[in-house]
Image (tube, rainbow, N blue to C red; front, side, top):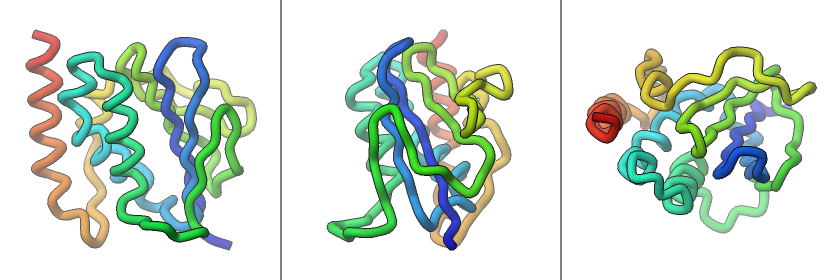
Length: 146
């Protein structure tokens, strides 16, 4: 049927959640989010949520152009992915939460974005440059807290 994935982005505690849906990119959902957060790391460090969220959305979706299929976007609801959990970026406390898709409950303690960027990087075709981007983002986030 596909390889569906969902990513969530939340600007403020108890605020609405922007969900992105992909019909074909479930296998690369972790690396796509790592790359997106790496690109947005300077804005995240500054607390510039509006720009950080836009950068993340742009990088997760990539170059989809004007296609009418394959991607969706919604507020506070999402299409069911092919995975049990989704990752929710919480800009308000600079964490990434792993959330059960059925109950919307966190299934693990939210991880600081900096720690999420330290997860082993899965390299997918066309993503070889992510290692350098993520390394740079880790350094930027460490510097913004110091």
